[in-house]
Image (tube, rainbow, N blue to C red):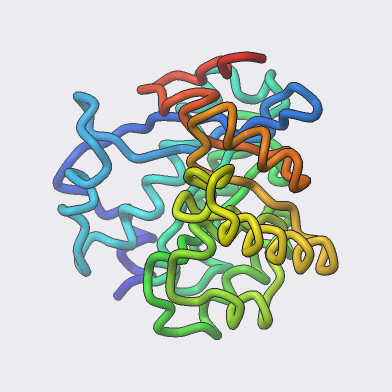
Length: 246
């Protein structure tokens, strides 16, 4: 049933669009990636849209999100920037990854966006009911040249157990660890330990939720150069914002 819904292009009973937030490489002074974030057609927050996603439309919604993010980002000039495009995905909405990627391939080819500039993020805030399925999805993505990322690391369900089974290309440290890190020695110790593990495993680290120069300075001292947060820019509705301070 799920694959048939994808093949038939089941229409969604609601409309949506995207906002984009930069992930900045503060060492190089460039944009590493733009993360696509779901929004309502009038700028409503993601929650208003996600509340309408259910078992009947989850597969169609996941496919539509990928296509919307790729087509909109390309129309805004992403291909010319050299930055990556980061897309959140719902692991439970991928029935057979080798088949569910067809729409992604088609959209990428149509706009001239190389597959190795696509990054797919799985949030750690959702329970991993089928770890083997998630790992199969990640491996299929890697086989096609996509970057894979674990989002919100340190605040969710999987943690180190997931990392032990699969090493993503990118790990994004959750805002609960980065917030006020300059005055929280325990957070600094935990982040330093995560960084050591990631260096050993060859995983790139992004710090999320950075809002102040003090947080930025501490994270840079720890060795993190990829930063996402309001300090460099809020999500911009249907736009690729130039990061502040670059």
